[in-house]
Length: 228
Image (tube, rainbow, N blue to C red; front, side):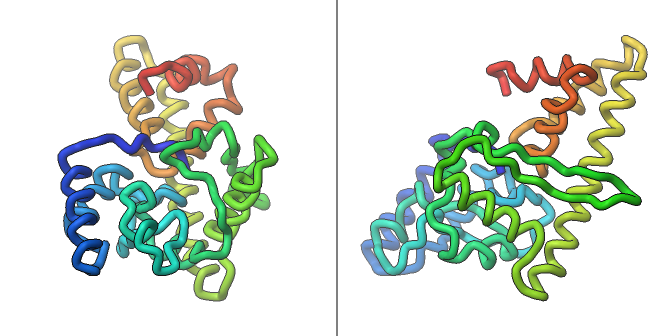
């Protein structure tokens, strides 16, 4: 979960217009325009778990609408989620952090501790004491570890995908550190892509860089620069 800027684009304008029409006609907010704009906005990944290998996309209301039209059709209240996260969240954790308004990484540190052969653990460290942060941490723990037998099976798959992404990311860092000067440019570009908003599980990758600042100084400088 990272901050995503809710930019005004042609797709977002069309989405907002379609929502106004749907509200006027008491129709569904689940329009083609809304789906296209949400996929663009969230880079095709779930806003909560950051998984991009999504089979089932769903439109998630950050604040549950409970049949209130002002929330149901509000573009700023609509988020792209996977079925696993949406069905985990429901209305159980309100209020949570709004990742289009808050810098999530200043509120929560995302870490994977342990390694193969040891007890691996995903840790979501609170960096402030707000109720929104506390609820978001509880939700993330439920997302990554499951709350029902079915959700626990889904969470195993999610953690496996995360593990593979982080393993590959660590290997890219090793290759970059060992590369000759003429090889560093391409590897550097690859690493920057891995830290970008569109990258799956970016919050975990960025925290890994922050936690290893001595060996990842160049990446840390890039991460802290305004361009990201």
